[in-house]
Image (cartoon, rainbow, N blue to C red; front, top):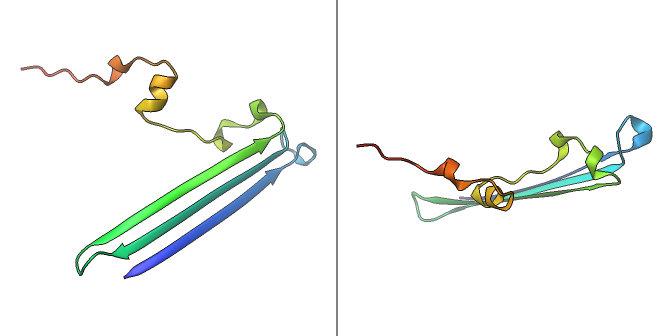
Length: 89
């Protein structure tokens, strides 16, 4: 068994059409599934996107892309002590 799927989406907004700023936003996704023998399958997925805005500060948070995980927390200067696990006997 195998399968592929690709999706591309482009959105645009203009300040003359009730938008806060001119913006072009694109998103893409691709996925592949492949059989590995009779009882196993592998799935690979890649998602990407970007925003191009005249005034990025006026772009609503719901349209922005955010990355999560410990790396972003460290870069932003947040303390790692929030993630420590204490074992009590």
